[in-house]
Length: 214
Image (cartoon, rainbow, N blue to C red; front, side, top):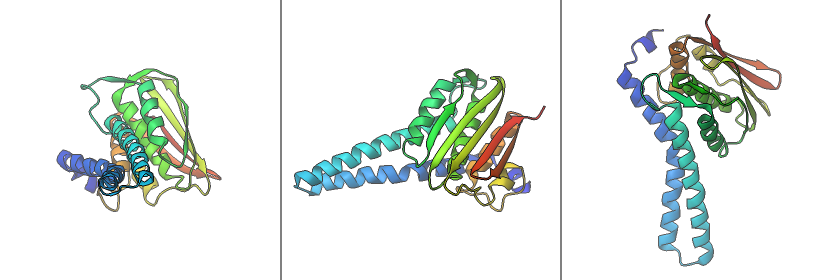
């Protein structure tokens, strides 16, 4: 996997930062548009529309940033643990702005942070598998110190994004850029936690698993 071997920590950080910025540009831009309407329009109806847009976009930007903080950020010192209840809160907030519903079936535990980061990134991948909307069911089994995760993404015409299966299985990606960095980052998290990833299409759903190598 030469492209990943050549990917420096600085390159990875830059690509992840680009991905996060891309995700929040839209709601932040909508806030700016709403403020411009407030500055220019004298109509009470337009002002109310602008305020609704600002409120909605601010909530969306906040939810995306809180999710990114846990999914991509340091989230404490090395070896730190994260409460899965906190992960559920940020995942639920993030998915409220998406087309699919989140069905969180994970018991609350303290878990090493890289496992939590991996789980949140798997939710992002599952969300890409149901672009028209549906349900993402998240389950966990095993010990919190060595868990297994299973996600089912069901909906209308679920699909595995092009190149996703190959990347998660460890094959050489066609390109390494801000678009492809999220599944690459997910793979790196799986390697760091000693887990194997699978993704398969099963009739009307896509099943994603992460389980220990031993």
